Image (cartoon, rainbow, N blue to C red; front, side):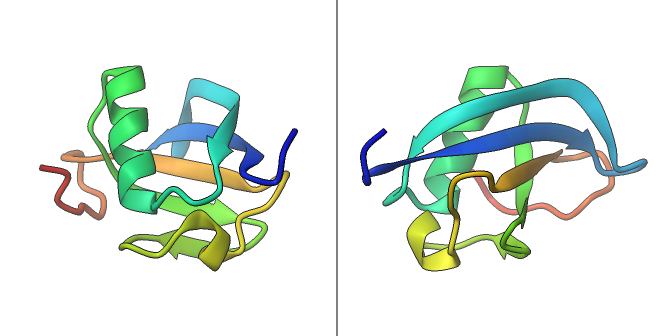
Length: 94
């Protein structure tokens, strides 16, 4: 693994119950990617509209144009994606 990528765990959750949907994967992602870019890529990959990304290790709400590196995302970070339009927080992904 190079220093330009980081291994994360991704889980898709439903915002109304905050339960995992059964979609969980270990993903190798570019560390210079923004949360907005990651959200768009995950939405396309899983065929679900993801509204918000939340992280554990570090604890953060991943939004905006900062890179994953700037948020402190590192190997072992667990990122939870909330499905948009189901009562949870939403951001524009157009």
